[in-house]
Length: 438
Image (cartoon, rainbow, N blue to C red; front, side):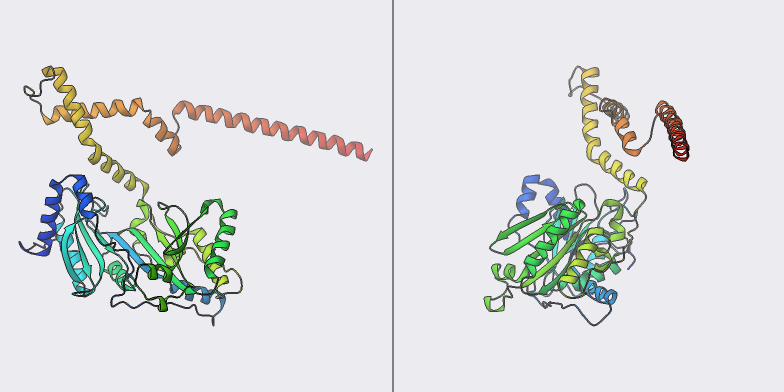
């Protein structure tokens, strides 16, 4: 749905409450903000609200490709987190842009999906304010809206799961928030079979030994059951496999009589890089799974293990569009300037006060132009002293003029040497043939 920029919030409405909360939090210290987030209920906890749990079974009555399609289509979203779309398409608020209309846009989406508004409170991860969204007046929290970023990042919507809530709400958010940027998505599939966890662990160790890019397998055992991971927490793709009902039992979400000891959850966690965030926000769970080389290999082996296919099947690749590199670099540069520009400005002020007013801040009279010019000069000297330009040129494969000449001379020399060696080898071969003929 297109964004309505003409929205004006009510003075006593929810949007105004969120903005007021953000303003209050801005005045507090970072320690206070962190403390306000402590003790809040973890939105990732599994709940049993109005969204019922379904253990999906793979179909077996198709050809291999169709069987794999059926298996992949059984994977669903279990966590979906996006940055709301901005007018510039960068995920950052423009200089003349405010958050009110975007927050109202998110609240309208919540109302369309029958969600109920919770209380306005503190935010997390750099946001000053947040509000939970519930699946009923007394229902569990299944989503959260946050605003008031300290670095002017757009408001955030996180759909936190629940028993099937994210499966229903994530596709709606994808359709509604056109141009959003994906921060994180969890794609899961539940399957019950005796010995399945041990079998998947052994298969995963075998694959990681033959593919160094997958990294190693990390295992954890606790009172919530066994878990193993492939990939690091900051990887673009990470796999988590764990005993789901044992976790539910440990968290008092189900009774012991309802616990299936063989139920295993396979969950891929996607955290796309900046240039792919907008494209990833439009993908289905199946398309996300097929965007990773090693995930496709693992899923093919998984399908064979649970009897979906009789042999590994090569899965088609999802090609994910990326934004031009220059856009990402511009965003990074602007973000860096916003974050560190004030530091250079303060350093420039201290230099100017020391040079012009003998260090007396009480007598100092400066202009913005003086401070900006001195800060720019300080930054220039900083990148020269750290040889940042040289390292950047090496990283981008750009050479200086003298280096280009040296590279050309080296290539010419290498070609002449190779030609001479080839001629010598041909001569030796000809002499050998003549001797053999004689």
